[in-house]
Image (cartoon, rainbow, N blue to C red):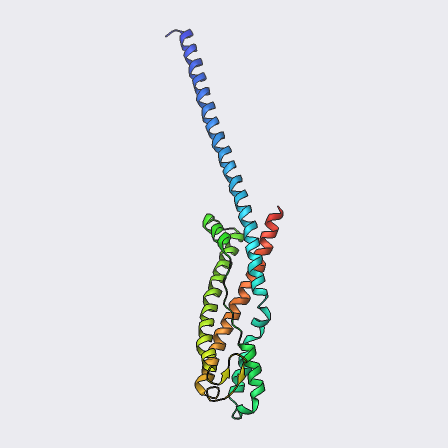
Length: 224
């Protein structure tokens, strides 16, 4: 092969290599742009979901805020009721018994709006960010509170409402007798109810704190 032909071959190889390099660079650049667009799209979708979660969280916060005073006092109310039931002269405390019954007659069972929260968690299963971890914990707390509050409601119906039915006019909540109220078994049932209510209150407080934290984290994120 002559020097001229060798030179032409080198030029061709160099040109061909340059063309291939340009193609490769073009493909890599296209992939990078596509990845950037996908990341931007995912970020916008996550931002929208976080906005929806913030709205859900506000609704859920309001639902618990209405019960805060009740939850803060229910355990001590049960304790006072249980101590009163132990008195040997219980019929002499009719007014106090009726006051406790009116206070305890209310029941709480919680359900939460979680569709946006669950969607976010399902779409970000590999996300280890603080927001994702906080949302996962919030979802767990709300689920626990739903379960235990439902159990508490069922237990209260079985132990408290049915226990009162023999001696209390449930339409006016006035005491007409003390037979069932003076039974040791009824007092023990109220002790059991108080333990469950205490656990509900603990889950309630934990959930509220997590709701506040999540709201703060999302608010800060959406500012950026």
